[in-house]
Image (cartoon, rainbow, N blue to C red; front, side, top):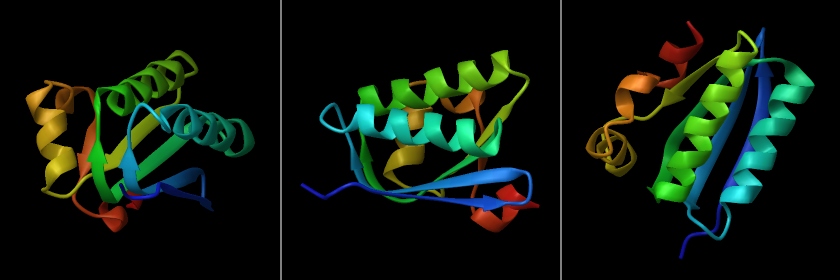
Length: 111
């Protein structure tokens, strides 16, 4: 099992949270806390970079959907960076992809 790594940085009015490794039921609560803290510290405009994520289960997808709903309720926004791969396929298979603005690269999401 890959270890989950999370980093967060500010880019202008956006906060970028990068996830690497695997997100599953065992660590989804840590991801939720990280996203919540990022928004609380830097504001309600969030980009979640999933480029280095190798796996995400339905619990992890639920964290992303819940975060999106919370941000929309605060007039915030959330975009995902998910180049073609396992994570993007999972978002499409679960019919969650249309909920998000999804970009191929971080630079596209930040433009």
